[in-house]
Length: 388
Ligand SMILES: *Cc1c(COP(=O)(O)O)cnc(C)c1O
Image (cartoon, rainbow, N blue to C red):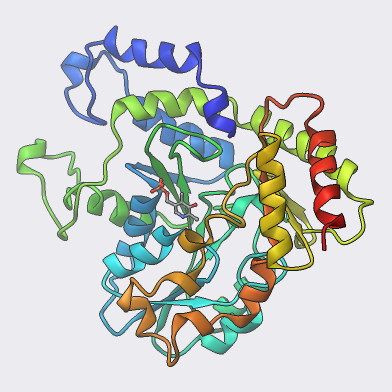
């Protein structure tokens, strides 16, 4: 639980700064009240600088970020957007809300998109691919980019769990056409609720910016109430309060990532010699955020008893194995828009993902970790490995 571990006076001071300067809580306008205080605009600018990218747009959530990114693509009912079977429901929900048909690929040992299955699932109707960097490990972007370039399909990187991670020395979220981030309360940075989109092209940025704000062109020649419009839109704006917290959190990102990496290594050093245990595979040239340390056991039964043993010593797990119903497409028959994309039931449509995923246990990495935690985890897992 990183970002939330560091909510402190820096965040509060950024908020106070708004109230000391007119208390304008809206991202733009009201110039004579706000004494040049623009928290959301500044957060966007600093985020772009951090990520070495040109354009960033702050929005109200990570789900909104996906929805707004998809709005730049003018999707129709017959268009298909492909994502992966292991993600949060939000990725598929955003595709459904955009009016397109969702489709999920299998995952491979990285627990992210299986490039071979992606290529099999692409058809002439495929209009975008949303690749997810689940729980801090980059997807196989080299291969996925090659495939998408071949078929001329834009890539959106769902970086909700990958903020601050890198691949080939570039920040995750800046490698595809667009990258989306979440700042909900469980993510690497938090603004309570919030999100960000990064863009390769100014054209996409302009379109997204208007769309997330009812289609406002922000035409400098006219006041806002007479503003020009080129399309309809919606309201996914971030408030100044969120922007203020985001500014303070962003300054802590490097520290958060280095502590997560350090603590994950301390835990893995204790576990690595245990027999019957493997660590999640990450692609070469990855710089992982280590939001979680994911280990693989012999089978589903062992994964479940591993969670039970860890809970006994007050160590929780995160998503795997206990929350697969929210994160694995096999269980999403409540979304007919998804299940109708498959010939068979979703329950049997991801055999490869299931085989990999249900043996996994995800140990959340805290930045503020007690010294004895790695040993406690080791002893619990040793007990599980002995059980048969
Ligand atoms: C958290 C998350 C989202 C949604 O973000 P919210 O800010 O909670 O709306 C989207 N995709 C993935 C993979 C996530 O984990």
